[in-house]
Length: 545
Picture 1 (cartoon, helix red, strand yellow):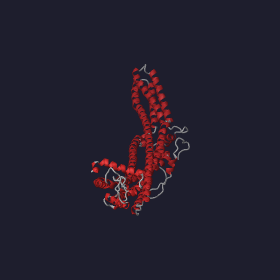
Picture 2: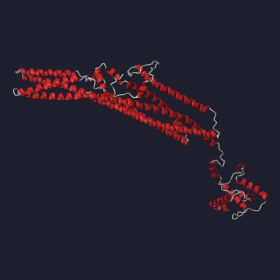
Picture 3: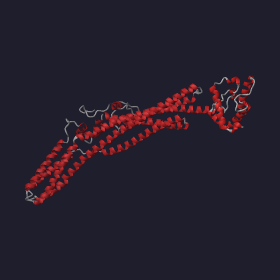
Picture 4: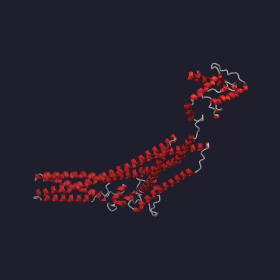
């Protein structure tokens, strides 16, 4: 458990919620919620969480299969107009709901993918900074020890030969050698980070590599979901059966992919939350055999009340360097006038001590807990806040995408059946029906000569074209002649005897029949007469013949 003095890092509430998820191995044995990635049972508990998502996928596919079977086996009652309108409305609203949910899912997915990427980028950045700090400490310690063991020893050996006749100077050199050995001893007391066998730079490189392909994969999934959703809506709008069938196949694949990503995201979020709830405990367990617990505790908590475990070593280091510098100053003042050849070695030793003192100040700054603790907290914030939050949004995206494509897979078969029924009804229409658009087009291509001659014959039988008055006939014969004129005009087909002739290129005979002339308004008569005149102007000499 984290110490009460720790106020800089507080695990977010969602990590505690995810940590409470049941941890069960594949033998259904409950486990504790401690983060132990090397433990086989703990790995099985995360796999079990992924299997729950797989069970959800199986249940989803089973429900879709039952729905498809019911849709295929039920009796077709769509012949009635009200049923058609109702089903069409259901398909439309289902398509709208699926499109909206898919758009919301894609938006949530983009946000979650970006948040997860930001969190892992912060983790890798902190790992690189921490690795730079530890590498700098090792470099300073190695360089200072190398200078004391090799450079100082060589200079002291030559000065011993030069000062051989002066015992007091030789004694001073021996004291300096003792101080150098003391410095080396203090440096050896510093922790050797390499023994931890953890290359933070390699971990950061591997994390960045995996994260790049994870981010790219989710980006492609988001684009694929959006394209499939738009293509399905386009297929519904254009009533394209082949496009709907293709999108149905891709919808099933995307549904499987959504559930698979959901299982992976939930398992990753739960495992990461187990670490975020108590990260200090895990790190102390990992380093207890390599680095002193006082040192790890000092860097993890970095409290003002905690003593610096390196303070004593650094203080002795500073005192030894100060003593050696005082001795070199005395030798430069008193020995150089007597032994001029010793000046070069003494100046080199003085330069070596100055460099060691500069290294000491850098080492003191690097060993301070504030730098590494800041990197540690930044890494925790990136993983436990942005990272886990992004994973939760990706889980929500997977659920919304699975819902949207389930609705779409339910709507497409009904739309497909409606399109098939509409095409069948269209094929069953009579081509000779004047209200069938296809029949009208066929009639317009094949019936113009017959209609023209019938109209000419009819016009000739009426007398002069300059007079609109019909010949004198008995009133009782008008309906009969009119009925015969209509029968001749429509080719003797009784189906068209009572069909209005507006737009068919011939005025109704009843317009010229006295008993029925009063049944038409002046506007209707003017319309028929104007249409007849237009036809005469259009066909020209054929009507005058």
